[in-house]
Image (cartoon, rainbow, N blue to C red):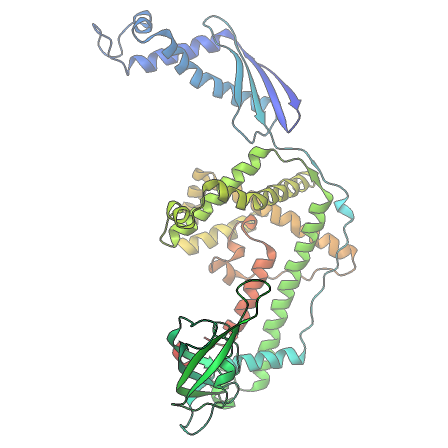
Length: 485
């Protein structure tokens, strides 16, 4: 087979392909054997009609179409391998010559992965910076933990609410202002003097009130339109019950945490905060390095790659809707939007993601980056724990679905970013500390167990920050007694 490749603008390639006449003859023979088994020709048992009879009965075009459907893609794939290109779209065939006794000739135009100009990414210098954990940080966290364990105790009827106390109350809109608010409801655990934007002025009014007391107050709302005066509305509030937050005594606090002393708790807090900040610093550093690398590179992305990623993002969005017991069609109907609107929403994200992957893949290719087998095994083990299936089954399933290659590509991007981050920190004179593995996060299905391209480092760091408090406060007050819960 003869193959030549011509590069066009916009990351397109035209393959000119010529195969021997025997290719056409053999494809037509296979087409005949396939069609004759599916067609009842009068006077012949199925599968026994001679070829010339079958051609007269169904038409030569049927055999030629069948033969071309098999031969063109097959020889296109061979041509792709021979030309050493990486298509990112389906080919467009033209100038096809497919006649019995003649060579197969055709041209196939296809979009390919674009070439990337990487720039001077090797000289990056990005310092690794960790925020130190201070005694004040530890004390603040200790206070937060105590607050999480607090109980709300009813106040005596004669005792008035002070700032920081809580009230269960009934709020109702009344006549007398610029408009009558459509509010008539019970509110639970409103903090006196706190923030409650739905009814401005409510929390300030509660300060000084007692159980059973009713008061009128005014709420100020923004003007209906620019240039008008602010709007005043009238409400009444009746206090049903008053509560004060009572923090646990040291003995109860330590018993709940399973610790012997406050010093032991503080040491534990410091270790957790230090680990969290080191993790956050590492992720922030990697993100800065990634942004710097991407800013130095240039690449012209074929529109088909962005469109394909848009479709993928829409599919993932539909899956999330399904998990929430709704459908994409229902979402579109309820919001009055269209698929095209969704594509526009996802366009920027799709373009950014494709650009990132192309650049990181180009660097990984240049530096011959390989994924440690241990990293692949860790992902498979995490999937196995999540699904309750053995690793061999997981691996086979992913391979059959073609998903394992994608996971390896994602891990390769993670690996090359790690190497770039370490290099950039070294150049800045702030070497990265050894990275500790967190197998618990992998078990929980967090980022360590997911393909790296699915999330951003700052999102994961945020999740870690949110976990610190909940892990430290092992026992929180019941939800119906804790207004902050």
